Amino acid sequence: MEADLITLSIPKPPTISVAGCQMAPILGDLDASLIEVKRALSWAQAEALDVICLPECFLTGYCRTPEEASVHSIDLDSGLFSRLMSELRQFDPVVILGLMERSGSELFNSAVIVERGRVLGLYRKQHLIESAFSPGRESPVFERNGMKYGVNICSDANFPEAATALAARGAEAIFYPLNNSLPHAVARKWRTRHVEILSARARECSAWVISADVVERSSTTTGYGCTAILDPHGRVVERCPELTTGRIRAVLASERLRETV
Image (tube, rainbow, N blue to C red; front, side, top):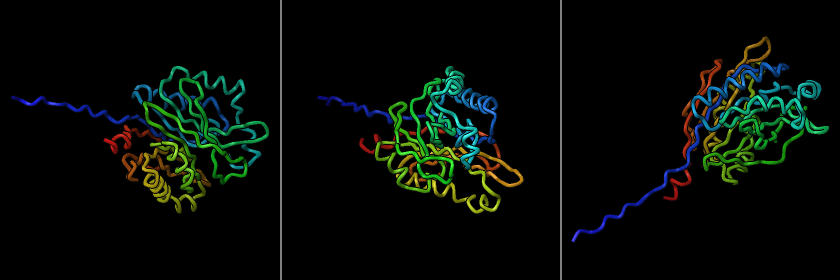
């Protein structure tokens, strides 16, 4: 008598397809910034990606002083912001879009999480190096395809607690919009340190890390670009070449289901 065969069905872990964009910064020209945002989203849509991350404050441009930031910041309740979001309604991928945000009398260095022109939420940079901004206080987590993710911004990466706060809420991927256009000597000093810091955050949180940075060469600053995707062991799986605009992508698999089966 033959024994009945029992087939076990092991569910596949959730996955999301993501991208980071390495871009030249734009300041004071929202229409030009919007063109580049739409170009990145058009590519992401053609590639059927789930989430795409752009650099820190990319929509408005990035400023450090209160005077400059006040001129270029946007109120999320304004007609201007609504118009900008209406231009993104045709795109399915979620975009993590940085901007300088005005809220009442305060300015924030923020990233809005946008799907088809609708703001799902926002993250405000908590660990500031800029005198222009007030610190954020919330660490929201979002979900796509059953996989949770969160956002930290640039210098937040130097503070492990910013990332572990997201991991404690279930985030398995952390996106880092960056703007590492720095005075030449400072840029050289930090050139290799950026990816080392991101690697440490990935290992500590057992999370995927996705960064998006700017590239720039001016008379006073250099942005080498640290746009990379790192696995939960801190290993770089994709990276844009330095001083070159471009995009990288990867499919991220949840580690948690795999650990329980």
